[in-house]
Image 1: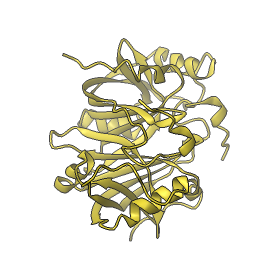
Image 2: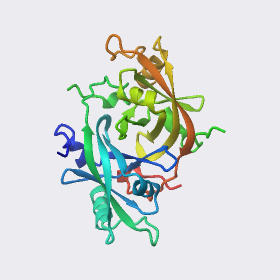
Image 3: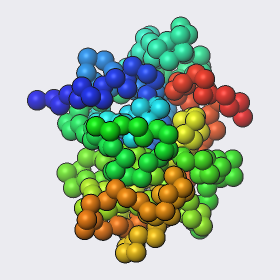
Image 4: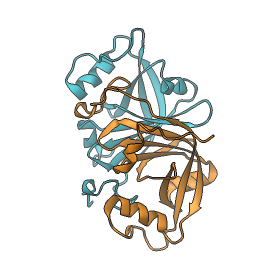
Length: 149
Length: 149
């Protein structure tokens, strides 16, 4: 059964969270960088272009982990470990929808001519969302660690 | 030669950045979660305890990547890919120094009795710090993407 994003953390997706995606490079090192994310029917989607490293990595090795942070409190996060399915976005519907969610704009304007959009659909195998008072690692910012549960 | 953190991004370490560390689990999936980081002589250090997953992962597979974000603009980041050296912190000097940097407090108070501190020293093999106007991925938060270089 596919694991679900826990109720206590799912709210972060409604407020422009910070996604960090990790893939495995052909040289064996790990690629980790920030991305925009969107939650669709319980799964996390990321849009990229086919020429980017993360897409090329996933074509060879579909392992992917997303860490999604509350943008106002990085101690509130959910980690989604699993495998990526790559879905073409030929009419740019996904990237434009994500852009709209984040900015209110209609069309993502930053791709170069000819860049092809693809959606990384993260199929979760494991989901981890520890509740951290201030205890798991040192507070990243004291004014942001106000959780006590 | 060890790569250096580029001048244009190194300032983020002076303002409580958000670190995200990735290690490889024994089951092959990737573990990615936020941590506090500190920069020492050009290398990034992370403190953890020996009972944590990230430490147990690194004992088996030293590959590690840190993505360190400007806490006010996640489009400003540096990615450090390499291998971890694990250095015991028996007198807790490293964790207490990190805690002091972040909070002004003298002693990190959140470990359970008996938890042993260890420092993950990230030896970089590759460092990536792309300059992103608003173009690489959709802006994570429009009000935070004010870079134009």
